[in-house]
Image (cartoon, rainbow, N blue to C red; front, side):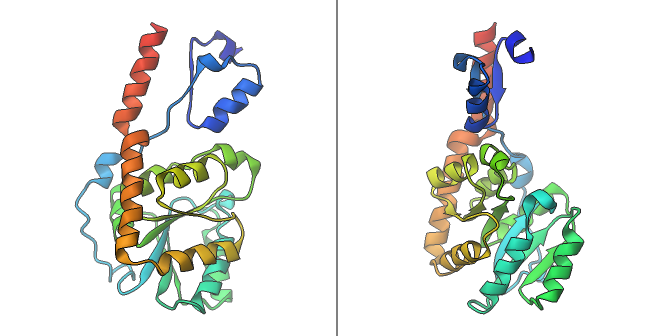
Length: 241
């Protein structure tokens, strides 16, 4: 009833648009407008003491955000075990909190991992600083059909800071990364796939890493930014009026 009564509908991903069309909503009534990130917070000067966070002299793979059941990060912890025997310089950094954090810490201890650290929840502006000193950034969700039509909000922030991304999400999110050329897609909840992608990223030169990050930033500015989102919303409002 709500969809039928609406003059126009905006969704955040192509997958949601497809689902609404399947449910009988006229396709001309639906526009996709991607979310953007807090660009101002991520533009603050990146002054961080890497030593203070235990990130100095390591190749840091950073996950920042909620650590709950939907993120299925136990697979990433197990991938860290595989990586530990391949590349001792690589370190996995988890920033944030959530209902699964204690179980993840317990698993880290059980596996006797020396390449995983946890940083407590930080203000978004501080998280931005951690992201800028990372070597690569990680997105991961449970292998569930629902997540194939979602784009986790952290993706926009990751692309905005111009770092390579390892994407453990299928569907729309994977399409964004593939189109941007900003990183590698992996099979969610598959520790070998995650570990192989980390190895691949680690072996790249700094120039190659920078090129990936630049591609992600360019894609963000062209398709996902606040400026682009506002322009698209303005067109929707004008068409409705």
